[in-house]
Image (cartoon, rainbow, N blue to C red; front, side, top):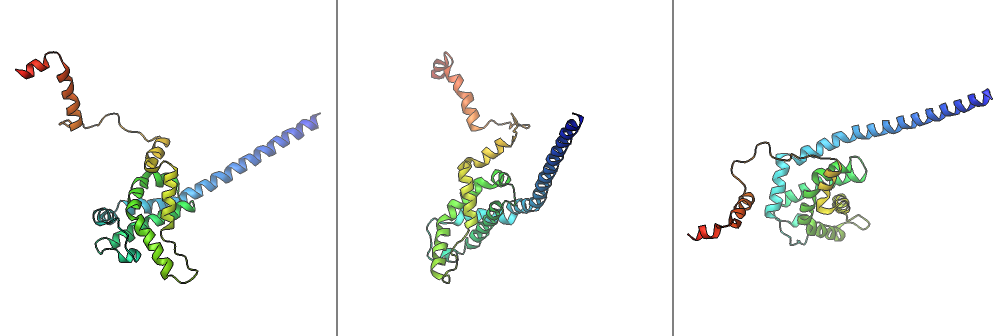
Length: 212
């Protein structure tokens, strides 16, 4: 009887050791992924917030045209061709990180998805034109793909809530906001001022007073 008890205890200890070892392996793998993704996330956010990149985004929004040009990106106007390449290749790089799971998708979508969709809508016709151009000009068998990883990123965003994907990720992660501004404006906003004026119009005698 005692030998059976010892055997059961030994088995339980062995199972516990296996569980601990598996947990350690998973924890170690997760920490490795996190440590490897941190430099990539840092680089993406630094580029995203840089003065140069923000200038390219502003230039793209200001000068771009929805009308596709024959000849792809190289045929774009000088005013915004370089901005189109810079923005497109930036999001293609981000999409590559997402596809190969080198970064946490939630961080990327929570930070960049809204503007990524806006800029894709601006560039989409020109991206398709560039693909058509490459289909004709590339050697036989060569890929005509262009900004495919950027497109993958957009598909992921659409699946997670479209333009509301960032807000959904932020809520899921528990992002918090102040109930009221710490430094409220001294002059009410136009919407607040309007809401404050309406109750006085509904008070008894207000019409007669206004008539006098």
